[in-house]
Image (cartoon, rainbow, N blue to C red; front, side, top):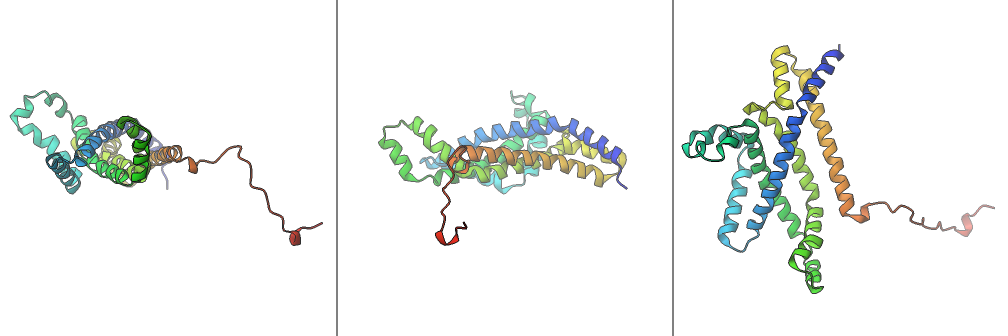
Length: 246
């Protein structure tokens, strides 16, 4: 028998923790995106030292579990006196900030490679055409390189955003009371694991559905050929003489 009052009350309690989950996502998404652009610039550099650093960064953060990275940042950094007496300690002693740092560092490694793939997919002829037209490097980046790179990278980038939303659930392991953390608290009091986690999964499903729709809208904006032409004349219908009925 479905206990609708319990499910409704659980959804309300989990929804109250939704701002924490959204805060984790947007903060780590923005910080990770900026960091990914920096890593991309280093990765594409002709300087072997800078390129090697970017390669090592991507290898470390893509090759190790996010959970371990989170524990190392939250539990490990506080063991060093130089960290506890530095200006970053007021930030790193907060569980929310540690979770954002871990998520941002991890997603930056994936996003940098996604952007690199989009950058390498740009036809060289379009860049040469822009330079031939007298575009400056900044104008070329803004009008040609960035839009085309984002268009090619968008499908994989949307997947990374969805994975980032789901990864925010790990923050509950360092006492960040997001949707998953509140769900665990409810389970400890009620022992009704199935119903609570179904409600939590529903919230994450709705969030990811919204993200998919946002990225689909961005893809339509960046790809005019995918947008329907409103008011465009309909193609004329060809009438075959043998098929015409009087």
